Image (cartoon, rainbow, N blue to C red; front, side):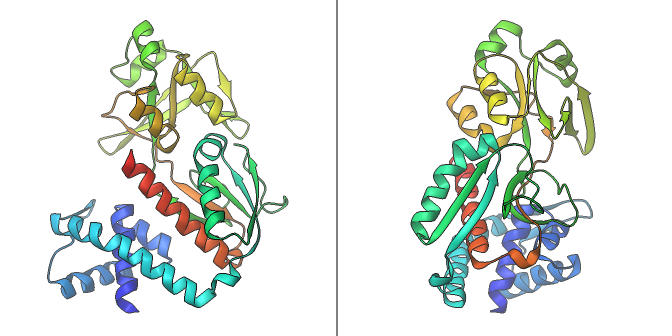
Length: 301
């Protein structure tokens, strides 16, 4: 179904905000991705994207079309998957490693719903911010933020547009003041997490298309992202967390976003596996399920 493929390319391009990124996710060339968008625009006799050499955004017509076709395309793809693979193939044991904060507080309930849909799937879940060695350990998939730690791994996108956000509790800000620019962070207690064996204490941001960074320090460091978020909510300092991790805290007022004009570092969420040949119908179903849940979760917030 050629039109379905073109609609999938349109949706992925709109979500990624980039032709080249959509092409990478779909294993296409940027030229093929652009050609598919042009064919779709010709079929609809309307312009879906405003393009320049450096940017791409949806037109009002494109935004309207995305809102209508996104759920429909997902339903059709799910129906096709059911016919091709058959529900009986969605069985077996899936061993997955989850990050501590997102995994414990958000993804675990989602996996309950996934197993309700596919009761013949058995999940073996580990929760840790240490990146599991999927080549040596008994792990099929690792749900992780950021770029690939190993170029030989395969990344299945879950939330490509996710970014980090600077935040603190109202209690902390009332006591210590609100930083108005990045340089103010040197006078604040910054709550750092660890990436591997390294303390992530150089926080990076985007300012009008340029990367800027600042060295921070504080009295608390943890390899567990959940601990860092809890410290921030408890008023112990300023955190630089994935937006997905702190959406509920920001919406409830437990945390306040700081320096909103500074765009946080990109933190795409992916399912990592060692080899593309591992991508079974169960893994494909899990990827689609998590993508939809993240989309609904972010919109709901």
